Image (tube, rainbow, N blue to C red):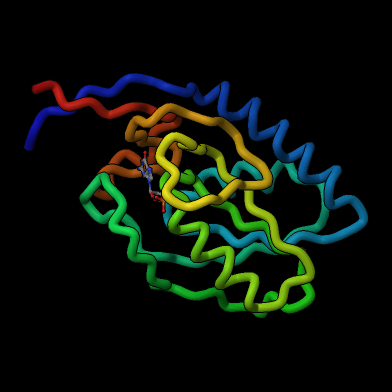
Length: 176
Ligand code: 5GP
């Protein structure tokens, strides 16, 4: 295996500060309502866990898993549901919680799929966005950080299922 070197892009402290701001904005926007959060497995688990502890409106959570990159770091463009939600979304105020928007293909598909389940409203929050990589026109309603076109790991994000437990978001560089 090629040796990898890690560089911190966003520290745990910066992430926490931004998540508090996002949660405050979301809590304001949904005041008087209750939220239904759809977490996208597995990458968004850490983000969702931290975000919900700062949201002040009542909320429920559920999870969906879609096919991802596997051990490759470029998007295949093929999206498949691997684990579906357990609850109906009809009449609910749904917020999709994603780790990162890259080409936009995953969220473009998920948004349409979830919209077809007739929620009352549907929005998307992503922790990270790589706008330079977009292949389809997709804009999240809430975004933590816009980042350059680098492959990142940590804070839930993996490389070949590793590194999800890192507290910081890091760039993984090959040393050769
Ligand atoms: P998209 O469909 O927008 O191209 O890709 C979305 C998914 O690709 C994300 O949910 C994530 O699983 C994966 N992905 C995209 N960029 C990165 C990255 O920089 N690091 C990691 N670990 N996953 C990424």
